[in-house]
Length: 298
Image 1 (cartoon, rainbow, N blue to C red):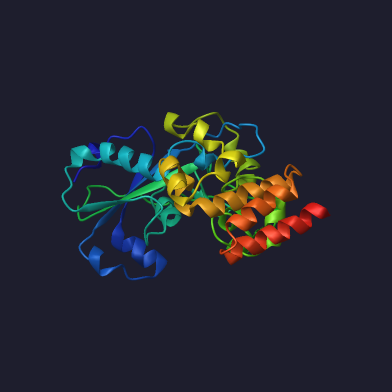
Image 2: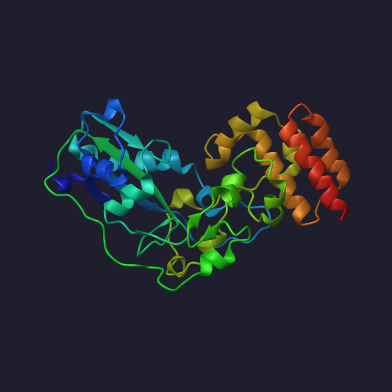
């Protein structure tokens, strides 16, 4: 198969599936036993700074990147006329950053993210796994983008980054997408969903303004406490069905907004108690609100 048939305005690379498995020293799922190639695409999020206290990280500004990237990839590979393939965007057993590295699309930085020389680390990765064999495959690039730079390590408020890599249990982006009960780690949270601190300080993310229009910030990136008061899970999922943060559900997003409100001293205890009483059956949530009430009194 000729790689020239792939039409993309953004970088992509192709690697042999077997070489990927050898690199990670694992056996692939049985359902992929006939697969031969991985086509790896990257697409840039907007790296333009938008001011505001209660905003998500940049990857959640616009439409759900899972849906958007899948559509972009479908269009890019249509001339290949593949018959046996799957498109994976951040929801598969494939190690996406490793695939992108092996495909020559960048290097893994000290922030544990893939850094592309042109687009930095504000990128979405999508992968096509197929049984087709291509006329040419890519290789990893050599080098070290970070060198002596430790800006991300120094900037991380919870010290989740170190020379040993990323400690997910301390990473705010992982914490605020879960029902974590490590309340202390939320004290330095600055984003409604996800976290950009280690990326904002990276020199590779200050090159130029870029980003797909669908990833630019929209009005649904701004969540209102008043609106959330009258919402339930079903209404939340329906309203934000096109947003990246839809999947974590209503209550974790309420928790995130309440945490930010407390961190900014922008909420009353009465408002906290309203949500605590409304969702008292959820112990993880109830206990976190109890912690926030105590913090508000400090």
